[in-house]
Amino acid sequence: MKEEKHFEAESKQLLDLMINSIYSEQEIFLRELLSNASDAIDKYRYLSLQNPDAFPSESHQIRIDRDKKERTITITDNGIGMSLEDLEKNLGTIAKSGSKEFLEKFEEAKKKDDMAIIGQFGVGFYSAFMVADSVEVLSKPIDGDAHLFQSEGKDTYSVEDAEAPFAHGTSIKIHLKKDEGDRHYGDYLEDYRIEGLVKKYSDYIRYPIVMEVEKVSDDDKHTDKKETELKTLNSMIPLWKKNPSEVKEEELKEFYKGKFGDYEEPLFASNVHVEGLYSYQALLFIPSHVPYDFYSESYEQGLSLYSRGIFIQDHYKELIPNYLRFVKGLVDSDDFPLNVSREMLQKTPEMAKIAKNIESKVIAELKKAKKNETEKYEKFFGMFGDHIKYGIYSTYGMKKDDLQDLLLFHHLGDDKLIDLETYVKDLDKKKPIYFASGKTLSEIKLLPQLEKYKKEGTDVLLLDKNIDEFCLMSMMEYKEHPFKDVSSESEEVSKEKKKELEDLSVKYRRLLDNLKESLTGKVDDVVFSSKLVDSPVCLSTKEGLSMNAERVLKEEPGEGKEGIKSTKVLEINPDHALFTSLASIEDDEQAKSLGSVLYDEAMLLQGYEIEDKAGFVAKINELMVKAMKK
Image 1: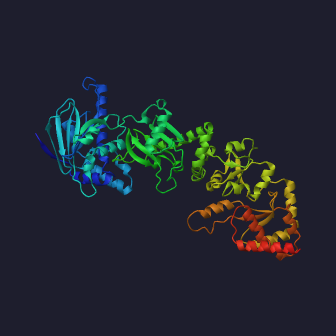
Image 2: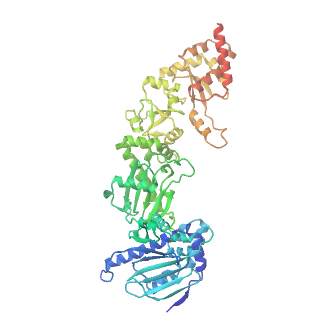
Image 3: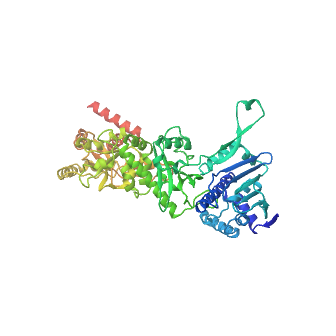
């Protein structure tokens, strides 16, 4: 006997909410219904293990049927099935916790901008009404009678006795809405649409999802006759669910190329299985080339999310830190705290711990590669090394211990890259790690400040990337060895050398003061140098902002750059012939006039632009004319 019943009073409001607010895409309905069918089969299999006599073991599948004329889609499973009481409890009451409570929590969540508060309410069935005018549910438990549930998603539903063509299970028939505007509901009746959605969302449901599809043959091309075949739409067993020891490297590479549409194999691939308080599986990949859109706003970082093999969302950022944005991959866990629509994760302490664990796994794999696959690691670092440095800089050095041994640098010693551990290997305790920075390696190698280190055979790191110096300054030191800029004014010298420079400063104080006065606003001081060997002058900076850091910051977009300025010191080589000539000048004004020439020469030697090129050339020409008259 057919019996009509009423939903709870708030059901219409809740259904509108389901359709318009909770789910972001209409196509999600198929994922939800297939997930429910898979759950029903899981329950049957569990009971068959507990009581094989009452629930005999059998093969299971989920079947999708379509009737284009009637505009219906039917999803059938041979799972546990539902009794009349189950139908009314699970479908007649929208959200198991009660629709009123659900609505209250949803409103509370909206105010807090936190969908996590909703929790899981078992409302996936009602996603069908995003595409359906009405829905019929025919269900039969193994030990009871079949019943038919019908609803148009309004205020009432009906239940009645029925006959089922199966021994147990559930069949859900969706009567699609009429097409209107850009809403083409009829597309869900097409082979390509259903197959695409199953592949996207439900490819790894563990039971075969089958559907009759048109079979195309050469004979069919010449007739109106269309044959069909039963096709399995899903692959069922995710690669990441297999035991890692059973997965070959070639399988991982092929999976990566197919999943992420890359024409090249990944540089590194990692199959991660973590069991414990927070269990998950992950496939993590590092591309062998920089993605074409990597530095554009269109690039989407993050990992794909699956829960129990069911796709949840793409590009989930919270599970991978920004400095590892080049990592591609997916994470699957039965324990993910999903929100009500199963489209996003709730932010919980557990999620933060999983994210931290994934970050640690990536770092561990990179350290392993650096040790065992040097060539491949150097290729990686050439592409993404700046991001490792950014990981240190952006956390104010907090990640130094995790990342510092991944760093590689060019250096003065030879053309090979060097890590910090190698640099300090034979270094006396607390001795500095020297570095020189600039735009390009060729410019850095020409810096006058390097002359002393070349002569002494002291190695120096060559920093040619904008992030390099900021990274080292965030670290401050490596294993008790402080970082030291060769362009810094302060320099360790012997007592004898220090006394020699002090005596020279006293002797030529008048000349130094004249040069300093002529360069007011450009330099803070003019001193004799202990660094220079062949060059006549150089510019150093006092403790604080270096000239290179000043350049980098001023090149960044934005306003308010006036206050960004390093404190410069002009250093003069007392052993150079130019100083001998300077020392012979008795005219104060003439000495002052040469100050800007020395300053501009130092700027050019260090690879920087000079402000007044015309003035510099004019003074050089003037000096040349005077020299030729003598």
